[in-house]
Image 1 (cartoon, rainbow, N blue to C red):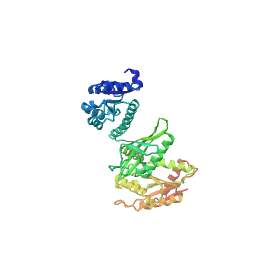
Image 2 (image 1 turned 180 degrees about the vertical axis):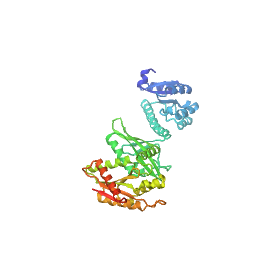
Image 3 (image 1 turned 120 degrees about the horizontal axis):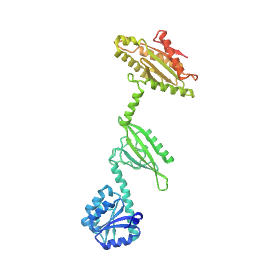
Image 4 (image 1 turned 90 degrees about the vertical axis):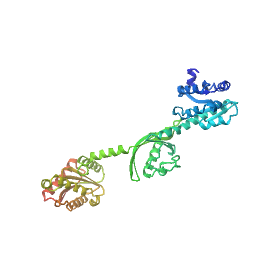
Length: 425
């Protein structure tokens, strides 16, 4: 066999002790296939080891297989390098039971003399296609060793296969359960995520563009995060025929990321937003309001005579007072405002952002906070009080003028006797 033949024809490894059968098959198929011939199994093994990436099919003398070749068949079918290569038995006459039994060991077909050219070609090609199809499931089986879930969907967004059944599926633990033919809506417990997945699939089918996103699943008191990567599958006519996807469990990574984000946005003593984050939220809401969005009000508050607490009782008790005020600001039910954010502005000073809140409601909210904190039991310390300034953002405001005005309102509350709310229009 020359190099040009190897480049244009599929290659058959033919192992047979019968030169007559070998010559007959070669004459029959030489116009379409190139051949490696040998009459010994060990030589066949050596040829396969050397040329397995080129060989398309193995033709094996059925008598040789029955007498000496069962271990050869098992070796080929169990070796991952050879999983794409089908073994076809060749019988010079009506096969005996020993020859037929080789089919149960992994040979995919048997060709019986007299050999018909077209029929033999078709059976070889069908065996190659069959083994390619079988290798798909072999690959899927091997991929199950990976922690990622690799899956394939058809053009109707129905699963063809998946390497793993993860715990946010319905009935995924049943021994007879299969994902094949099912959609995300059929199988996923979280229907909202299932609908989002289906919409993402349809968008891929429409645009031909892949996506990557992270979803959160909480089932049976287990919170998990999954990275989902999806890409379209194209057929030979350049049409989208399905979706291939990869799901990675990124729970530990996302929990760490969220923890770091929380630490970056949160005041360590109180658990409220830190100054940078509450300022960012105020300024973002302020811009939205200026663009025609909901009204925005802010409250600035300060613990009265806080230095006296630290001087008389120590900084540990001072920190306890600050945390107690933070607990009041966290109590959404007591404050009674639908959407607000509270943050520590610095020291014993706090800022509250009230979204979609007019000034009159903000003033009432500030008074609720004042009363709630003054009634907080801080034993053995005496009750503590706070002063609060309130204002509503105006279209004419800048961020600086908004902060200046609410700070002035707080200053007036302090100068007017403390433990009160002062509103600046």
